[in-house]
Image 1: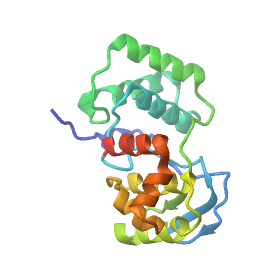
Image 2: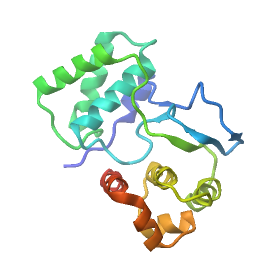
Image 3: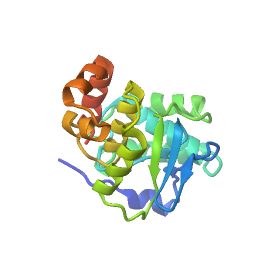
Image 4: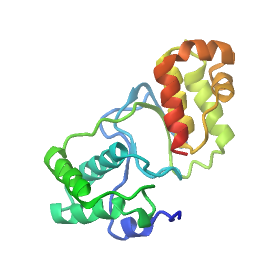
Length: 205
């Protein structure tokens, strides 16, 4: 049985689950987006797409981010309540049931380790809320800002993340179009690690 994500519960308690970079300064910024030429690890946009949490590792990362973003405004007991809520499949955030002992150990680890910025994926383009850009317009900007430069694994990965962030399946044809190369060239330059990452990102959609 599939459950709808209960965002109302988070919003009513003023839980922070999105934050743009606070230290890194964008190379370009306008009303529609921020572009970081060297990338930023400070973008935390949880629950941005319809994709749900599918693994224990991802669940713990979400907990670490929630603790980090809310640590100045939440006490430990309230965070435990929050973590249990997110981990409850019936609340629509995860796709699996987790045993209570494993969950308690995970929460304990987060409370012990939390406070430092969690490991994050690099982002180059952050589209602003209410930018009113269509998906095609966003992808045009992604191709313009990232895709027309030298083909590297970093640039391929950056575009993969932008596509995934919008809840769209990543295909070689679409990547090649945005990067301005053939699918054969793209396939040759991706390597096993990026191909596996593409598969894992698509599985979350």
